[in-house]
Image (tube, rainbow, N blue to C red):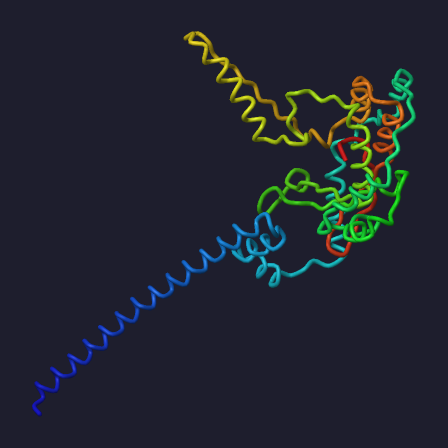
Length: 316
């Protein structure tokens, strides 16, 4: 075989190898794209199915998508002293809005003299059982250590008629408003966790006394059967009605006001005065006054609790 023929054979072999490599690379990229697409569709389907049926599992899938679980495993955990210091700093930040305010809730007791002094309504066993039966067993445990599943499991055997002072204590979980928060005073939202029994007592009192609370028809927040959607639908209809009269001179002026830390700064004295003006019974008013007074909270971080902080303002 001549040298020329041998060179031709080698060249063709190299071309075949190069062509096979290019085809392999193309197939490999295609398979990788298919796997990525299948994974995306799988997680999208899981997220869509679990968003409302199983929120905790839904969050786990979201965390896995963004790599949060891997980050948690590889990051260095702070020691207990650092966590304790951080918890105290967060508590200082959360109580800062009312640090320089005077407690006014006790100074409005005289308004109770004009209220209807009917005896307080007493819940029956059926009402207590119904509320306990519908407690969400997945809710976290508060400072009293009583889990929600226990109340639900033994709802037929539990009776409670007085609001204990210990149920006014909240454990606060700091939730960052932004990624990589740097300002401890403004970039954390406090989620207050109350004991499950306290929530049951709140629902019982509200159920018994709701008839005495006449809310404005235009209020959509914290009202059963209403939401931001109903608020938008209501104001949109008002805008249509105002501009659909056929006159070219009709217009609409809208002013939106956002109050800074409105729930943290709610004055208890003002709130009690407003409730008295609504004509609620004296017994429920006094219960609400006791419910708002003497409240405390602690910031809870993994393994540590901050010192106690007094809550003299805000909506529990």
